[in-house]
Image (cartoon, rainbow, N blue to C red; front, side, top):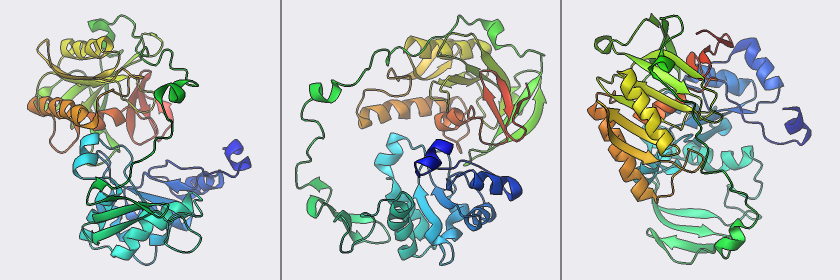
Length: 387
């Protein structure tokens, strides 16, 4: 933070539920924005404390409905629109910022306020002084719409030149690099496809140390979790599933184990190597054997996503680049992802959540209430490992 302040750069915040003196201290430390607000009262307090609010509507975190009132005449100039994490299929089918604009207008927000938040406010916050408005001295980057409320795009202009119309390019887009060799000559990509290193795991690796462990509650449409007490084992009838996070960078053998409620699998297991922010392997399941198979499947693929049941892999997507990215085009990647989600829902995963995006955030130990890391359950409010 001190280095960022010294260079007078932007410091983005990440502080769900922070209020009062703690918020004042946080803002004093330099945090200029927040994209984790889930209630309007919290957002208003942060605006009054000097922060900018990024209204998020992504694949898992959907906060627009509760925060749309911020786009009224009083507060909209301190608001931006963001997606945070977004699946490729959602981008292709629903869109990106354009999707949030449509939703906000449909929820009753003034179109002029919504468009200001989506363009000028974002440019202002990030210090892009020649972008975000159509006026003398600004770059001529703009979009012409056929329908303002539906964000139906007629044409797109870059530096005053029309680049597309009616969804088709009208001018060739010049690549930043003229050839792949030039693009890659200064890039060290050694090891980028060799990032999954897991110690040998057994059924014993998935046992809870004391026989009992915390139960993390999943909240539909939110990244926040709840404390649902403790459990001593899997109980599918009561929606108690086992949750594991296996360290995958240095083969330490560390495995965090607890239980989760709200995911609602009836059988099988789901796992992914996208697990914010350490990106270890996180898995949820109704049996230890299937959880182990899901983890080993990801190890075999050098990263990825998997759904298994009764000792059989139902669907998988390899993410060999750092265990986070694939080398497929958007359509092929989305087809694989659709197959994974269909398999997870087929095993009973809650329809109101995204089986993979929701899972990937349960390991992020900076959002209340409880999170699971490879070292155990973290109580975010208390800044401590509880089990």
